Length: 149
Image (tube, rainbow, N blue to C red):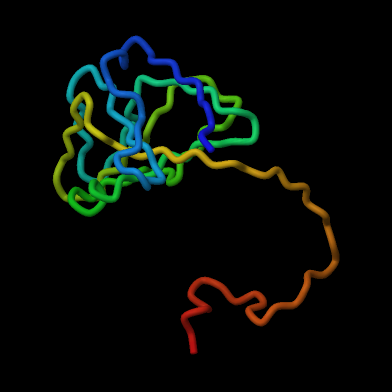
């Protein structure tokens, strides 16, 4: 089932493609850089890169902005707040905080595929405070606990 999401191209993104799936079974849609001039992200630095898009997600959905695996592997680039979350009530421009983990400066050009966006259904929860939690084999073990013998 396809979910309809309204999208508005902002003035500085009018000539760029809308987010789209790059294969039949892709989970994420590519996002494009709507920069007006080349942006340099220095080694170890990060910058907010505009996409030129604003979206209106249906209530009960969120969009996650995630790194592209190719950029991560080939250029050491990630999304700093992975995953970035776009809430259903946000109507501003979708931006991507790119982090350059490589030893070289990174140049972002107009139309570069900079991240992917995945839309998910979310459930709202309500916390119920209790004095004890149910017991499991794992218990409080964490941070590598499941890899120990």
